[in-house]
Each structure stands twice: as structure tokens, then as C-alpha cells.
Image 1 (cartoon, helix red, strand yellow):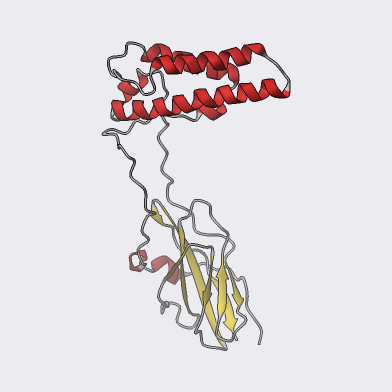
Image 2: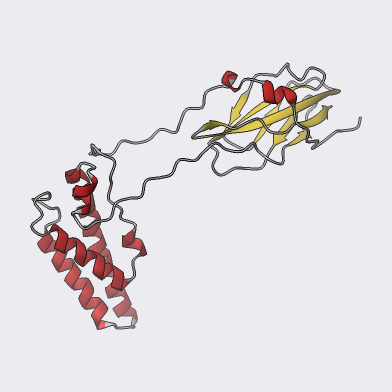
Length: 242
């Protein structure tokens, strides 16, 4: 029996089928923060790992200046005195500029101490500013950039339908889309392409169909599911199941 594999043809049935019949894909669960802000603005702490020594010196100095006497943040945690002490220790280690193993270890330790206090202070600013952007900016910290939503995904490419190891089975595959949260698959006999088997949702870019009728040609299509919902159905791949 010849196997018709990897044939890509536009399926009229796929274009007319209602996506509304698919099984719903629930978004991943998220953990609520300890003190969620009322607004949307949050402190960005990425600079703590990205900054060079000179940049960290400048950024920490700006934050100290902005927080000093700031009525929006009356009880900073940690105290500004503690933050000043940690910053001075970091600056002293950098100024020493010892390139020995001990000198590098001291700079690394002093930086870690300073960054730990800045992270704690960033959390305090998050809670105290309650998500209000002007208040957050007055602290000297920079806000996180809002994430741009991923638009509708394109139909999966490189759809393949290959014979399974057991009679009556076949595996469908497609190219993985890193933006997809799930994949939905549908399969039908080629003679009755509108008679789709129940749609199957998987987290991976492949699915094993079982219980197919041997010596029958089947068609398969797949769509990706993202934050904007499912894509259009892909082109069709066909296979004669043994």
C-alpha cells in the first residue's frame, strides 16, 4: 500500500469549519503578588543585573537622591542610611580597583549587598506607590515597560502526517511556534473531509491519532492557540493509514 505523505493542499472544509467548536484552552494560572498594586506601574529591577559598575553607581545615587525627603515614601525599607552605607562600600571596592582574586571577590560581594538592598527598596516602592506611575517615577526607579500582546498567530507550517508503529495509528506533526500555548488537531477520512473527529488539544507540536480505520486515507489539520485565540487551520496533510 502506497503512503501519501506530507501533501499540502488548502482544505475548503478547514476554511469553513467553525473554530467555536474547539475545546477551550484555559490560560496558565498565575500567582497573585503579596501586595498587588492598585495601578499597573511596577518598578523595573533589571538594571541591577545589567548595569556596569559605573552605571550602578549612577543609578543607585539617583535613587538615593530621589528618595531622600520624598513624602510619598516616608518609611523606606531598608532605611536610606543603610542603603548609603552599602553604596559607599561598593564605591570603595570599585575605587580600589584591585585586579587580584581577593579584589574581584570584594567588589562582587559589595555589589551583591547593594543590589539586595535595592531590590528590597524596589518592593517597598511598588507597594507604597500603589501602581501610580508619577509616584513611582518620583522614587528614582524606572518602571517596567508594558508587555505588548501577541497578535493572532499564523497557521502552523510544515504539517506532516506519518504512519504509526501500530495498525490504525498515525502521528501528526508541525513546526513548533514559540508563541503558541497549545495546538489543536483535527482529522477526518479523505472521502468525507467534513466529518471531523473530535478536536484534540495538546501542549506539544505533535499528536498520535489512534483507532483509525486501516487502509483508509485520512486528512489532518492543526491550528495554534495563543493569547489572541486560535489561528486559522493549517494546510492539509494526508496519509493512507495501515
